[in-house]
Each structure stands twice: as structure tokens, then as C-alpha cells.
Length: 133
Image (cartoon, rainbow, N blue to C red; front, top):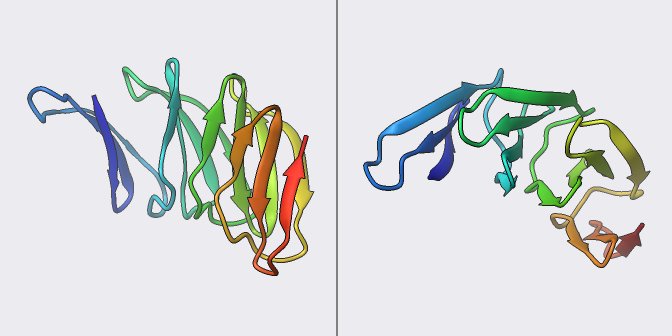
């Protein structure tokens, strides 16, 4: 299966035939790369939403509204979804979308978050590297 986005739609294609398997629409354009693990695919939108869909059917599992557009890739590891939005980093429970924590960076994000060794790493526009647990 191949997953992609165009304008306001997020979709999955059959890898063998190229046929659209499912399509999901948001209110504004898709602005982040997707992250997938197990039966979920998670992505952010310019409407400030973080969406988790069933990877096989495209049915919405949960959505969470952030304070601003999600423009960097969402990352997903096990039970944690991490994302950067509006100068902060958020970690969500992958099963429910419930916010586990949020940390402000003092300036805008410069990079996508990285999940490694139980920590979330990112950099800010002022050149600071952050490691958060």
C-alpha cells in the first residue's frame, strides 16, 4: 500500500494496481508527512488537526486539534506520537490521541522531532537542541 496526499485529501493506493483504496478529506491542506505503525497512520493538517486513521480502511480512529498548523512530519514509535506545532513539541498516546505532555521551545521549530531511547529530540530556530522525556 502506498500513502500520499494532495490538496485536502489523504489517500492510500494499492501498491500493485495503483488504484485508490481509500481517501480521507481534511478542512485545509495536508502539511506533514505521514507516520505509520501497526494499524495506524497519523498525519497533520494545515487546519491544526492531527489525524489517526486505520491504515487498511481509512476510517478515523481519533483526531486532536493543535493550536496551529502541523507543518513538520509527525513521528510515531510504539505508543507515542510526537509532533511540532507553533513553537512547541507535543507527545500523544497513539491509541487515543490524548496529550501526554507539551513543551514550549521559546522560538519556532527548526526540525521534525526524533524519537529515540525514550526521548524526543528537536531543534528550535534559535539553534537550541532539545532532548525531552
